[in-house]
Image (spheres, one colour):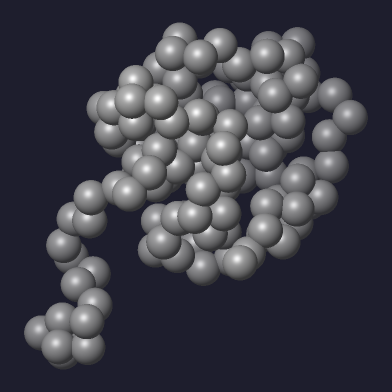
Length: 129
């Protein structure tokens, strides 16, 4: 109750404001709804700090899907708008940093090439507003 009095509601579901938030929350239906109304899965969008982390507040829906660790969501995104080879390698590198082995295998079945996982996460964190 004290949190709610201060304007925070940690146990209340918050509706995603954009495709990146929906992806970070792992809600495939929400992501698809945004994409089918014109959202770009590669657009960098602002997400609330509680969605991914306080250090990661500006991501694409594809990047946010990596934090959700949901292979079904990633496959749905790939079906909706196929992920090109360069983006697959980038996301697989991010997945390596996050330790999401199944997502990495899906994105780069032949292995991740030219990957600096620390650099990928550092660049995403540097997008802060």
